Structure formats: structure tokens, C-alpha cells
Amino acid sequence: MHTLKLKVRNKARVEGSICEAYLLEEISNFSSMYFEPQVRIGHTRPPRNDEGGDDLSDGNRLSIFKTPGRAFGSSSYRILEDRELEAAELYILLNCVEIEPYIE
Image 1: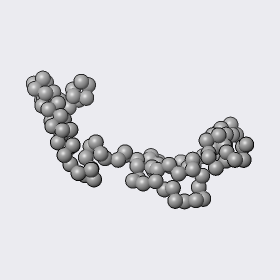
Image 2: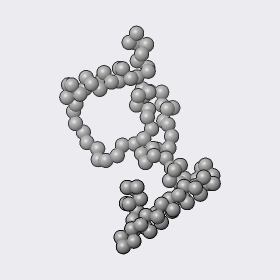
Image 3: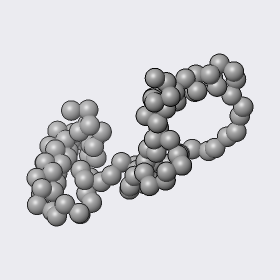
Image 4: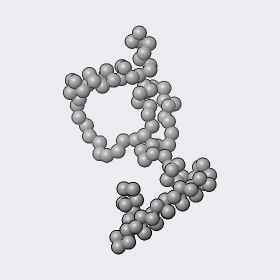
């Protein structure tokens, strides 16, 4: 209900505006089922930070760093503290498939 209240345009007739927004949303959901799968609409659109494919062809990178997506926001540079560096190394050692044979 909260999302419908956010769509209210006519503050004088709130109930009618909520009903209109609900009907519009239901009609668009129903009609979207008849589009071809490759047509990009609200429900079939890829996530916002997805680049559209997996970059798993690069054999030099570890599997833990092969996730699709891109960074957002401004970039910054800083040197990790010793505790942060140890935590990052431990995370990679525990979660990387390529390192499992060496651990055993």
C-alpha cells in the first residue's frame, strides 16, 4: 500500500488516484506477459549494475574476482591497515576454489 501512496498525483482525490495507479500497474503487469522474452521491460530488465555478461573467460583471475558488475561512486585510494589486509587474505583463502587443493 505504501508504494501506491507514493504514486498519488492528485492530492484532492487521493482514493481515485490510488485506484488509478493500482489499475495502471496491474494492466502493465498483465500485458507484459505477452511481450517477447528479449523485450526489456520493468520485470525483465537486468539489474542496474549488471554489465550484461559473465567475464569468466579470463584464466588469470581467481574465481572470487570474476563476478559481473561494475563499481559505482567515486573511486578512492587508501592503504589497508594490517588487520584489514589479514581479513582480506583470510576471506580469499577460505572462499576461493583454486586454493582448496593447497589447503588440504
